[in-house]
Length: 335
Image (cartoon, rainbow, N blue to C red; front, top):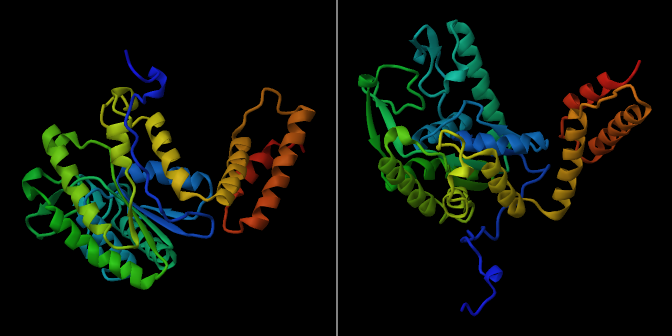
């Protein structure tokens, strides 16, 4: 017979969360760079009106692409229209995600230049930097010798694929993180490894790739201003079940992302910030509410109350942009 009551024995391992951890808030502008996982978490930050610039150059997966993106942000690398390539009728750039491409060369160049300017402004004012490493595999363009952020459907034979060693990852990121710290002495960096599986590389190869990223993250976190958040471990060890994946068995489900987000929030937000976040979330949700009877006196009073709360919050959170919520609420008022 067991000596302990069965309900006193946990049925899963708990991943320790980092302590101490840098605080995030409405007065700490942040930049989020990396794979689609940082997009999922970053979207939650943006929804709550926190000041975060999220992947201005588009999603970046490998450490060399992320290092180069930060070099753009620091002004160490300049955008050159001559580096544009045409692939399947779309003008692209190997340093940018395909979402910034365009059939017209001038439009593509303008979009990319604006993205670089946005990143430079964000880097110049950031107090927090979140980087999510997706894969250690890189593609080197044979003709130019450049490791690309995105292949843009250029034929595979134009590239050489290989996996970065942990040392190569550290060598790529350490200098640019140090440059960011020199620019912003109060900067705190959060490193994560994406739990998204890159199964196109192969199941075993994906695990080896993640291992290289984890070892590199450990080495980078030896700097006192670099902190590791265990999003990968939370997925692998606490949520070890395919019900926490989408139907592709590759991407974490919304439930999984919500859980990892809640773990992040528990260490990243102080008590007063949590109160502000709850107030902002109430406004956002209230503006999205679709009543059965929009002309009712009760709903009209609710809308006016929400607009008053926005005015009150704007006094305390001057950087928060409530214009979408205000517009939706004002459109619901009867003339």
